Length: 188
Image (cartoon, rainbow, N blue to C red; front, side, top):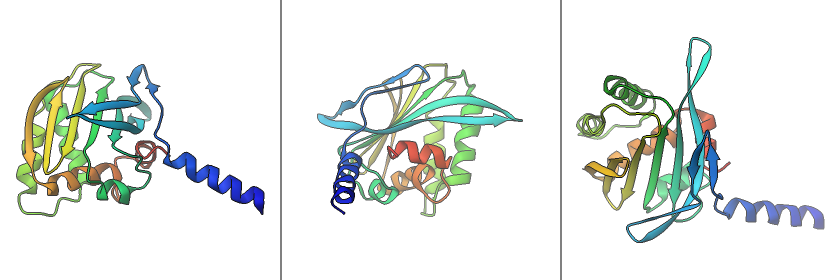
């Protein structure tokens, strides 16, 4: 019984620790980032693949940074933030394919049921052009503002927490991009 309690306590302690720096497919993910003067810890990261016929294509490495460990979807949705998601692309992608991919993902996974969702989604998609291998899209949720940048250059903002929740639902909702990526972003 004592051994079980020790193992349970150790397991609980490990789930509360932040993820260490990682490297996935050659993309270096630091253990922490400073955003607007606040230190955010790497919560989790994973590889997004897409099957073309039966061949898996490595598309991007996604990472989530948060002020403290978030190990459940409910914790992500309840977090006051700031939260930062990065998407580092492993392939060159045309502007039309970027737009098509984001639109498809929003349609398949986002819980966007608020007035103005379609406009916010289209504004978000409009921030992006063609991407080259190694480019990083960053989505920062701070307060009620979502700031989108590519390679550190701000592309625009979207006001309101409704969009933030809809965007997060693509990764942490009931129909995530992939269950494996959801688990990886949660550090599980």
